[in-house]
Length: 423
Image 1 (cartoon, helix red, strand yellow):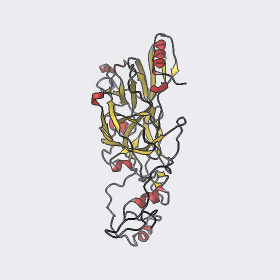
Image 2: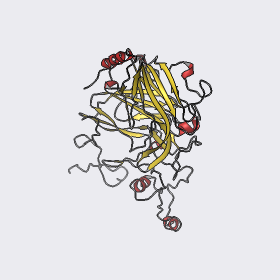
Image 3: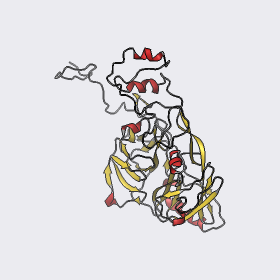
């Protein structure tokens, strides 16, 4: 049974009026945000306060099958679980530190008392290993906010300590949203053969992630045809990211400042999300199919990169491969005609790369290699959907599709004929 926002708020008011009530619960109904590859954090009602518990800790995280690392996060994941609450509620967040060093939590974008802002040494002493501290404040706004440390940020952010803090408006808004997704952008320096991110890297990263996953391990967005979809995109990486959606034109409708007045809404197909920014993008899923959603910086839709290597394109390599194998058994020359063969051989497992290192691109689609990794996922729009199950690949047999018209390169000026033409 679906729970309406009105029912959810009425229930919250009833619980808040009973000081002794303790209820274990999670946000439910159409207000619930889907954090792809993640989850929302459970809470208790304790004396009229919505109480959450975050545990800062180390865990083993998988970016995609074949690549794992020792990362830091909250409650066993990076990003940490999404905190969801309603404007006007009083919240208490207990933070337990299980890291080997002090930490704090900053509530990025929230309006709150100075002593709750979470900058170590400025607003509070640091949370020492083994300690639990409480942050408590009343939510004075709605919108998509974030949380992350303001303590040894170079290490703690680089290791994955971040999450969403989403505040739903107390009053319903028009037009309503049927699907609500959250994506957090981040970057990682996980050097070939290593198992812990390098916090000292500032520009040349190896992995670019949506919610700490790389394609094809990123979950797709699902939408039934005609539904209104909201995509909340936050950026805690070291780069700005132009997020681009295929097949649809979205409207930029809000930020961590909440949903904007309609006079500020603007249509786009690509929106740059700056470092430390949040943008809310909304669109009507009116175009069935499998559509790409990705960062438009080309290197950000790749996995492990080879920095500062010579450019082999156009270089006749001849017998170089045989000579190289005398020193590096199994090595394969690549790049003479571009990097497509790199994806073919490494992505398909024909050549073994360095330990715990993904190929640059490894996604496989219904027509072959998708040749994407990193900040890339899919929007899957269908006339009908059953639950939240992935519907598989779109059946495009009944819709217009690009096709080969000639199998060889025509002479300049020669007419081009369709293979299906009859003469």
